[in-house]
Structure formats: C-alpha cells, structure tokens
Amino acid sequence: MILFRKTACFKIISMVLVFLFVFQADLLLSRGENLQERFDTAKKNYTDGNYERAAYQFQKLTEAYQTVQDQSEETKTAYGQALLLLGACHEKMGQPEAAEENYRTARKLLGTDLVVPGVYLEDLSIFQKPGGKKTGENRVIQKEVKKKKKFPWLLVAGGAVVVVVALLLLKKSKKSEPPKTANIDITFSPNPVYSDSSGYWSYQIILKETNGVGVTLTEMDYSPGTWNGGTPEEFFGTDFLSANGTLTGYIQSWGYSDGSVITVSISGDDANGHKNLTWSGTVTLRKSSNQSLSPTASSSLQERGGTGTGKE
Image 1: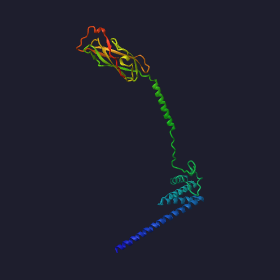
Image 2 (image 1 turned 45 degrees about the horizontal axis):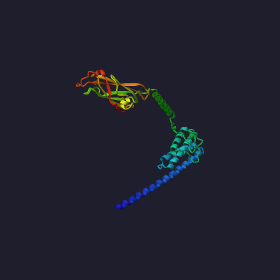
Image 3 (image 1 turned 120 degrees about the horizontal axis):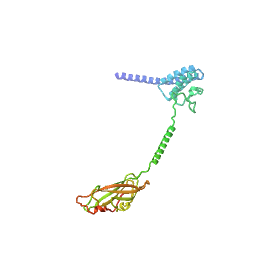
Image 4 (image 1 turned 180 degrees about the vertical axis):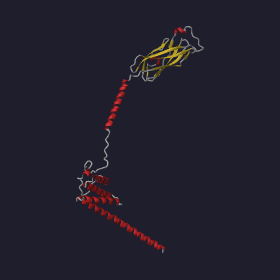
C-alpha cells in the first residue's frame, strides 16, 4: 500500500513537471512572438511619423528585452534595434541627450551593423556623428573618441640628431688630443748589486714600455765610465721595443768604488713620431766584504758589456 502511494505520487509530480516545462516553453515562444509584433507596431508608428507614440512603445520594448532569459544573438539584435529607433524618436522630438544615450547603448549591442530593415536613418544628424557615414557603417556618438597614436617621429629625429652631434664631438675631441708619447721604465736586478770574488758586478737591465706606444731604440749610454756594449740592437738582439713590451740584457762592470751609482740612458723614436726621446735608470754598486779594491781600478773606470739578449 505504501509502495503504491509512493509510485502514484512520483507519477503525479512527473506529470506536473512535464506540464510546467511545456507551458514555460510555449510561454517563452509566445512571448518572443509578442515582442516581435510589438516591435513591428512601434516601427510602423516611427515610419508614419508618430514619434511620441513610437518612443513610448520602444521604451517598453527595451524594458521587456532586458527581462528575457534567452539572451541569444537574435534577442540582442532586436534589443539593439529597439534602442536605435528609440534614439531616433528622441532625435526627431528634439531630445539630443536622450538620443545620444540610446545610440551609444545600441552601438554596444550591434557593433557596426547599425541598420534597421525598412527604416531610413541617414537624415539623423546626431546619429551620423562623428565623422559621417563610412562604407558599410553608420557611426554614432560615443562618450570618448579614441585617437590613433602617432609615431613620435619628432622625438626620434631629435634623438638621432643628439647622437650624431655627440659622436662628432667625441671624434673631434679625440682628434684634438695630442698623440701619446712612449715611456720606458729602466730597472735593474739586483739593485743594489754586490761584487763577486773577482771584483766584478754582474746584473740585469730591464726595459718596460708603459704608455702603449712602440719605440725604435737608437742609442745606449753608460755613466760614469765607457759603454762597450754596442748599439741597442747588438746588445738586446733587436732595436724595437713594442707597446707595453719588455726587453732584457746583462751588464758586467768593474773598477768602481763601493757605493758607486751607475746611470744607464736609452734614446729612441716612438711610433707616434716623437724623435730623440731619452729615458734613464740607476743602479748602485756595492763591494762585498771579502773583496779589496785594486789600487789602479778607481782610475780606469772601465765597463764591459756582456752578450746582449732581449725579449719583447
């Protein structure tokens, strides 16, 4: 018995639901047909010149379209056309602000397809703003007209001029700067140097170019005393000291007193055209404690150059 009652109740509920579904569908269909009939009536009043009556009908239509649950593209198009003709009614009645408002809303729904079949809108001045009609498009008033951004040619041209001027000034400043002059640091190793058991001082001379300019060595001098090492090329094995390069050679001296200071001078022409440049360095000669000075050595002051070798 209980099972029977439950089954009967379920059937009744199912029938009610089916009825409501069919009824709702018929209601929506009839409502859609009713809205189309109302639209056609309002449109006829507009084309007949009954603008006040048509405006009232289109106003009611727009309110009705907003309550339609089925917001399909067809519904949106009908809603947009109703707003478009509502704006046209306001323009015809001399109400520009209301016309512009409805035109704007219609534009959002219709995009560029601002056409209502059977209705001529070309004589509406507010509808045509701004810029008039383009092919295939009626343009309406917008709250904001977006301007196309122009490429900043003037700014680019100005920047290019600044860059060119800066490069020219930089080039000119480089030209105005005098060419660099070579510089040679002359050092000795060891320094001071101590005599050996035979009374000779043997040491290394080192030339280092430090200003980035090559030098052709032309002369080598030794004071006090006599230089017997030959030309720079004979002594170092080359007469050219490259930019930031190094040359080394070996010197042997004798006949000096303890604490004597020898000055070695180098002359040459650098690669930037500077002629007869001279650089010098000094080395101190010290006597070893077990070495006695020859009575005749101090008067001879002789120097003997060893076989010169050099490296760039």
